[in-house]
Image 1 (cartoon, rainbow, N blue to C red):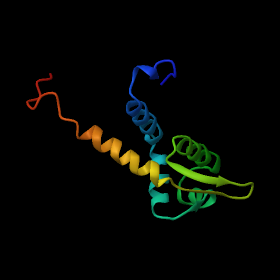
Image 2 (image 1 turned 30 degrees about the horizontal axis):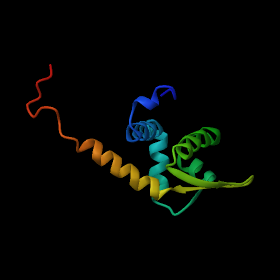
Image 3 (image 1 turned 135 degrees about the vertical axis):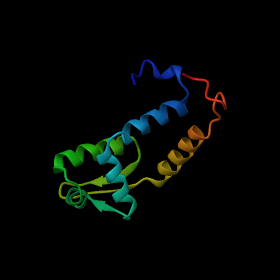
Image 4 (image 1 turned 60 degrees about the vertical axis):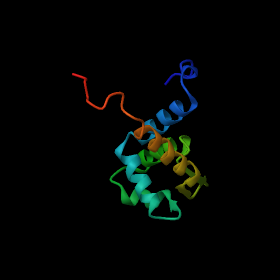
Length: 111
């Protein structure tokens, strides 16, 4: 979403769209599921678990980190990542609110 258009939307709408964009790849979902089973994870461990090249995994980790879903420390030999549970819990709240919004009509009059 272009930055020149985001001011027309609420902060919640922009946040939800950014998170949805970060979640929009099965490899990223797999990475998050893997990280949810561990307290921390070295990038090499993630690469061993997924059928992807190290460079591809690194790109997906960057997207997740930029979205705030994960946090990590990068050092030349190891990169350690984990779920950012503050953001994770906020995401749960945003998604819950979004999916609990009442429908415009109870009798589906569309098409």
